[in-house]
Figure 1 (cartoon, rainbow, N blue to C red):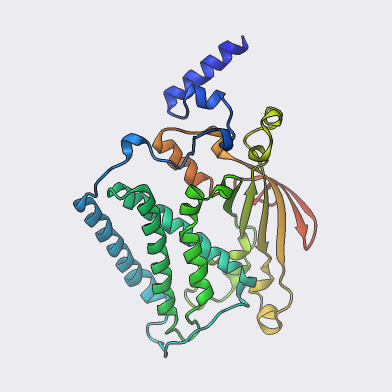
Figure 2 (figure 1 turned 30 degrees about the vertical axis):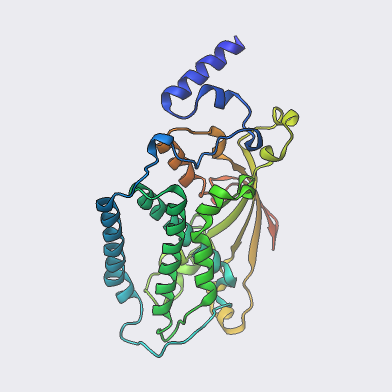
Length: 317
């Protein structure tokens, strides 16, 4: 009966394109398997660049940048209040959690650009490389504009954070340590502190700057660290995550006047390693790649500055 169950399960997974029978039922440890969910299908790899596709991809990127500037940046920034170019590192803002936000934006940009470069026919390595360089150049361009703003400035650390994030997808593909850890993000509006604050760039604010309700995570995968003999006793999908956020005190007048009343928050949580599904079709691997950047709701313990238990954080109840 057990063998029949395995046969039916593997057949269903093969038909759905999630896995091959030998790969799913065999050992899942990366050290004794050549499988990597980020590798490309052999039939998908192109040996030459498609000039029309690459031109279309570059044209689309340029148009997106232009539209973002015209409809968002030019209106939301300070076009009527420009000043001389200057540097400013805002170490007080959001207790530096905003640097993790810049990092996350670099990751998102690089993942999207990677798909475009790969579709255009660039090699896998070059697609990751140019995606990272493109994300870095975007952050440099944005901060150059900030450098002329009356209330902002060119922040080297903002650019550095976004640039490092742009190369995370490449690191996850080629650096072995990322077989053990995933970097994730969660968001849920539990506090209106950010939206009640008067914003310089826009009256209502945007969720990407709402660091009070964002949490950034490092998710560790114990299964991959266990010896083969112990792996059969541990669920391959079960991970543990450590997260950091801030409380609403960073958007109060008292904080900006006296730099007091604001705290970082630290969490320990259960997590799900979606790579345990070991998808083999490209669409399924791409889906896992994106989903793995999001920390799904799970039982969580806040350990600093106070102790609280949440059943499905980031939803606080």
